[in-house]
Amino acid sequence: MGRQGHPLRILFVAMAESVHTARWLGQLTDQGWDLHLFPSRRFGPHEALRAVTVHSPVRSGRAGLDASVRERGLPWPLPRGRRRLANALERCPGDLLKPAVRLSRLIHRLRPDIVHSLEMQSAGYLTLAAKRLVGSPFPKWIYSSWGSDLYYFGRMLEHEPRIRAVLAECDYLFTDCERDQGLARELGFRGESLGVFPGPGGFDLEEMWSLRKPGPVAARPLIMVKAGHESWAGRTQVAVEALARVADQLRPYEVVFCSNEPLAARTLDPLSQVGVRCAVLPPSPHQEILERLGRARVALAVNVSDGTPNTLLEAMIMGALPVQSDTV
Image (tube, rainbow, N blue to C red):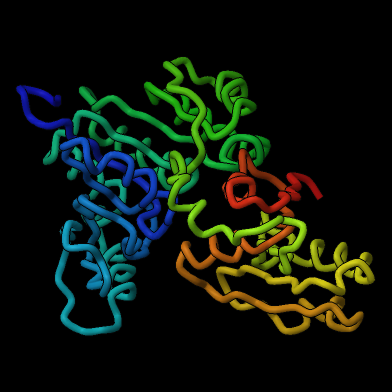
């Protein structure tokens, strides 16, 4: 219970558009707690969110949101232009509409028992800025480390002092791998560890197993590749070039690239030129991606850095052989 016998009130600072955020909060929706979400980026809430109040400068108006999701913010009657309005509000003179100021005012108004930051670079930094505005007393602060938060960004001169500042201020810690427990201590965390959990919190095994293709894994016809642009983490081109080197062994398979954004046509040229059948799965509901994993013999993801990758865990659950890198 929260203060004075009221339900526990938790304010999450997180990427509202992320399925990982939706799944973490989904673990708590049957507890009778009062859940709130402050988006750490300018995107609307994910359709999988349930039983939470989302505090944005402008309501998303997103179709398909569950009726249990309440949005707080300026209404916008038109089908387009919401993000442009939100961006314009943040550029207004003065600090009143700046994210850290809005978050600090929300903390003053809600008086949550817990503030929980999911991820460091957008949510952790923002929470620390709000805490400095709020002053004392500040609610108990939990930080959940995702993927590359500490291992990758902690090596960068522009990020290390900011990471240390967050870790010095937060009270509790979740990480998604054992490695980052020790790394957080090295970077100055002195609070209490709450353990190691996957970024989304966990998995509904029965639901996922129901999506697996019956029969032996060796008979599955697909190879799944987690794809994306050549960003700071993703290395799709490396995966393509590696697969092209074993093209003669890929004849029985279709290689499916699961991408959260369009892939340039030339990206897959090294495979198509050697006769490998390829397909690109565009941004799709998570269940559809799991269904493909349940038909895959191998799941390949090439990153320069990660914690415990969700793709790896999902591949294991769905019976596909995971091939996962964390350096290239």
